[in-house]
Structure formats: structure tokens, C-alpha cells
Image (cartoon, rainbow, N blue to C red; front, side, top):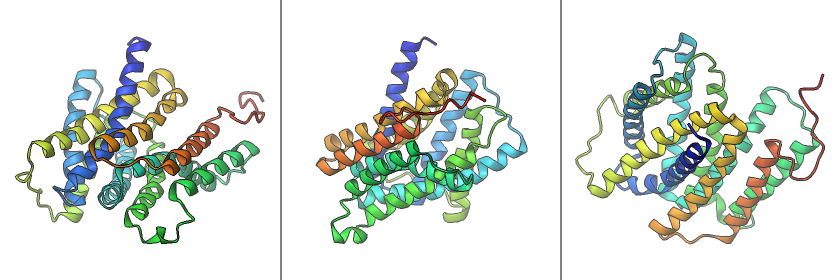
Length: 298
């Protein structure tokens, strides 16, 4: 695939991920959180079946991969539960900025703690950027923030994401798309058995708007977005592909403003800039000109 084509597809994929925040808020008017989790990952799994056949990827992964997919799926259930409730009680655009920028920062922190990694000056500066950005987004000076259920659910969603990222990172053998298929399938099956009493939720209350948003959330936002992102990481490498991730909060705010009429808060924008700078710094882009040692040098 030509680099220009993949670039266009990556932009569309990040727009897809940004759009999920609006679709989630709309769909919470049709479903409870667990029912929406089931249908999101049921349709996403079907979409990945088609992608795997077209791309001729094998469905085969080893028993360790299946176990990792299952454990990751339990994290996906928790993350999506908080994600959907956050969009229901809070603003989708606000959550799209807070959660998508806080996710990689918290993942870095959890990995550093688990690995007992000593932070260097570059990392400390990055985390300072991130802390300042999050505090600005939250408008921490407002004393009533703890009573905002939407904010609390968004923070819980962000705190849950490292679980999925860290566990899934141990998957090494096999197709990443196949791993996603099993992870999505386990997510749908898990929420059906654990929280829906093995009763498939009804779709009879969906109108045309509901169907458009459900398919957009599942097939465009999840299946398409995931497939293109994995394609980009395998072609470009994770560092370059992750650079496109910063289109997600921007598009989330844009769609929330257009389709939900949410007002873009200046503090959300300023704080989002700080957190984006933090993530770039953590990825080694060295924004503040701190010397970064060459890890390939013995």
C-alpha cells in the first residue's frame, strides 16, 4: 500500500475513533451500558471476521494468546462501562479530550511502576506537562468537581485503560487482528454471561438514528479504526502511527460541538494542549531539548 493511501486511511481511522464519543452518548439514550457493550463488540467481531478473510490473516493464535485476549476483554468491559456512563452523564467532547490524552500518560506511569523504572528528567518534565494539563481540563479549582458523575466515570475509564494496553502488549505470536477478534468476541460473550444473564438485549427500540450510530460505533469506529491502526503500526512502526492518535481528541471535540451542540471550553483546549505535549515528550520527541541517550549504543 502506498504511503499516501495509508496516511489518508489513518486520518479516517482517527476521525472514526473521535466520532465514537458522540455515538456513545447518543446510543446511551437507547441502551443501558452493558447492552451497548454487547452490541458494540458483537458487531465489531463480525466486522473483523470479514477483515481477516479479506486480508487472509489466520484466525489461529496459541493458548497464551487466548488467555491474554480473555483478560484484556475483562478490561474492555470495565473500560467501556465507565466510557459509556461517562458520556451519558458528562460531555462527550470533554471526555474525548480528557480520556484519550490521559490514557497513554497513565499507561506510561503504570509500566514504570510495574517495571520499577527510574524516571529521567525527560520523563519528569513530560509528566509535569501531563499533570498540569489534566488539572486544567478538570478545572480543579472548582470545589464541586467530585460531584460530577461524568468526570468521575471518565477518570475511571482512563485508569482502566492501562490494564488493556499492558496485558495485550504481551501478545507476540500471531496476527494482531486475530487477537482483536478474540478479545472483542470475549468482551461480547463476557458481558452477556456476567451482566445480562445470558439474555441477548433487544434491538427493537432502535430507529434509523440509533442504527446509524450503532454501526458507526461498531464497524467504523472499532473494526475499521482498529484494522487501519494495526496496518499502520506494522508498516510504519508504533511511534509514527501513535503520532496520529492526537487527531482523536480534536475530532471528538469537533463532532460533539456539531452534533451535540456542546460548547468547547477554553480550559479543555488549553489542558488538552499540555497533555498532548506530555505524550509527545514521553514518546521521545524531546520537545524541551533535553538530551536523550541513544539506547542502541552499548
